[in-house]
Amino acid sequence: MLSADFGNLDRDVELVNASKAGWFHLDIMDGVFVPNISYGMPLTKAIARLARKPMDAHLMIVEPHKYVTRFAELGVDYLSVHYEACKSNLHETLALIRNSGMKAGIAINPETSEEFIAQYLDEADYVLVMSVHPGFSGQKFIDGSVEKVARVKALIDREKANCFIEIDGGVGIGNIAALEAAGASVFVAGSAAFSGDAMANIAALAEAE
Image 1 (cartoon, one colour):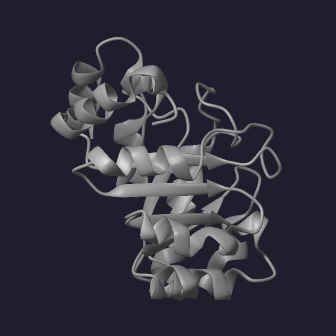
Image 2 (cartoon, helix red, strand yellow):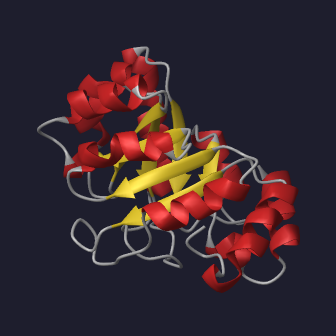
């Protein structure tokens, strides 16, 4: 939803409701963990008021544990936090997310080795692989991201974890099939969805999986 028209938010939420998209993806940025500020609780609440599909919040913020309960209260279904933002208390944060009734995700930056999260996989429901540097929409897909998804899938299999893989950043018609073949099953598309005819774009992305 970072690529939606915030001046016509109700319209774009209803568009996603009517489209072939599976979820609403909410990029929460604080200007500290990433160099941009997006939106927080009020806009999330406004989306939740109309959303008829699950909400997936991606917290690109420091100290995410402080906000877990508030996102649960807003009706978020999936909540991911960055390994890089909470290395010291990731075990506790994942447990808090699950205990709040949400699915727990671990997000990792492009430069972060997937091996760092091996010890946490049995406490998570999914891994969010960033295929751009977090903080801004419209970035170019980073070369090697398909291979990283394959490595994360191999790691999940090796650890016998019950996790799925979400991919975020530069996802489009040209790479979505390769990402699915590598092991991803949830695809975040911002610019590729909202640039031009959003309904047609989302349908094309869904059919390209």
